[in-house]
Amino acid sequence: LQQLGIQNPLYIMPSLPCPFGMRAAARRLLAFSAAAFACAASPISSLPNADAEAQLASAAVCLLQKSSAHKKEPLAQGRALGDDTLAHPKTTFGSVLLNGLSWNSHWQCSENPECLAAATTTFVELTKLSDAHFAVAIQLGKTSPVDLPSSGLLGWTQVDGTCRSAYGDTLALVLAPGYSVQAQGGGCLSTDYDARAFAVARVKPPAHVYGCDELCIVGIHAPHSPVLQGKSTVASVCADLVQQCVVAMGDWNREPEGLLVVWQDLIGGSSPHIIAPNERTCCWPEWKYYNAWYDHLATNVAHAHVSETAVYDYPNTHLLPESQHKPISVQLILPS
Image 1 (tube, rainbow, N blue to C red):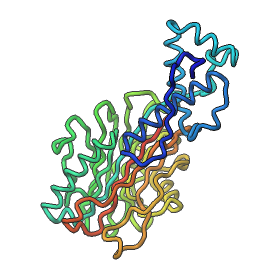
Image 2: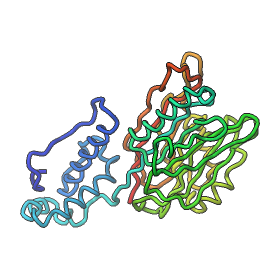
Image 3: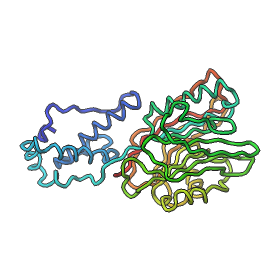
Image 4: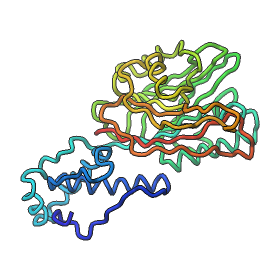
């Protein structure tokens, strides 16, 4: 780093427990270190998470190159170590950060006005805490989803999925300002007696994603039985984006191995190469319910990486929110 003109470099090992945002910040600094070593043609294999941070690293290289005008001498020293590595950095892609949040507060909570109000507040707070760009609220509302833009997410766009059948189901997919919704849809995924909702949006993100002029973002509450409907809606909204530009998040009612079948029955295209997190998220109280690993983000966007995941504890347990899931957040790095 000193050979590249950076005096007294700070090295960070993001291994100690700390808040979600602090871990992300530490890894961004780690990525800058990896980029600098790559530019100098020095080994970076000793840096933890170097591969996972490759997308962020190239952005640091770009910034370093842009600043070379007033650091010509140190950069020349760096070039001597690796010839043309500064002009041709080893990392190919830049990066686009896409943070998602999902929570199934469960229908029992929506039956209780006090619990519903508390869950709405919690969902909005978690969306902001996790720096989410999109979020999925499942069963937050009895017959229709809670209006989240008027509940604290001012300026966000909400896409609803509602089942108005025997048992009913609700889901809200919300997208942050800057994510322009080009088309949208939603509905039910199974029979009246296993009613589960979904919502889908074709989105123009504020930053370009390599290979994807737009993204297909899906919020899902999968039925326990097979998916019987909804694929035509996804196809009409997203068209060819299903091939390699999908990010889907929610309660899949399945562990990762079973998610792939649901993906093909609803979305099609290339199967996801990332499914995260992979840990218990269901249900409260845990002594009463099956040990279920049901809540995940999945994507088939090529060259995508997961930077961070968080599984939060069950919120508002003083209100006895029967069957509630744990909220999850995932920080996804997409290529630009």
